[in-house]
Length: 296
Image (cartoon, rainbow, N blue to C red; front, side, top):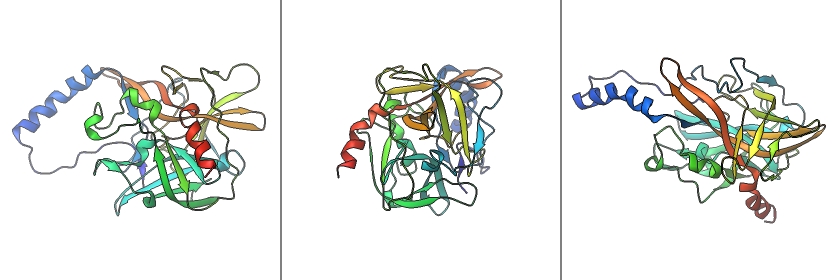
């Protein structure tokens, strides 16, 4: 069963001396690394008890039944890379047969390339063993400015901060789902929620509840921050929520202003990594590609 992002070390034969020296140096190297961007994608090892915890110790996410819109349009993006190599992220139906998620979710580090579209599956409105609809992916496109090969990363499990605004992928489904999509709202230089009754929401399938939709309502987000096309937010999240929609809810209306991609962290001695804020992609980054796909 796919689960959240973490790493494990398997016990094997004694390591060579040069590897033992490198491992002794690792804590110092991590301390010197300072702030980092940790991808929120799901991988294959058991989940660690890690949460962004940006707004404090209390986890403000709650489980929501995806039995009504807009939650019905949010689902799991399942990626099968091999018989025992599976992962998942969160995706959102934003147009007929069109799902947006994070590009790094589709990258297979083992072969240092993107996985095949036929190995990707979107399941909308999943709640435990039930779901509303599903479809295989016919094709997908990613930003030509997103570079995520192992050689181009700060560390194998990190995303370069300059890549975050380009960390998006649009999946074209094989089938049309009986689900109303959530329209995108390309908002430039927005500080949200702003005035009125609108509220910012992050909704995704985290590693602690991989088959239940978790929602944090009432957080904040900024577009084009800290650079054009980027999005920052102060919503709680878990690994597995890469690609999760950052929504603006206003009464019975909902729109997608961007997607979550990573968590900016800082390493603190005797405390570990402390979350600073969520980082993602503003909808302005994939607005043109969505329009082009709808005209096909």
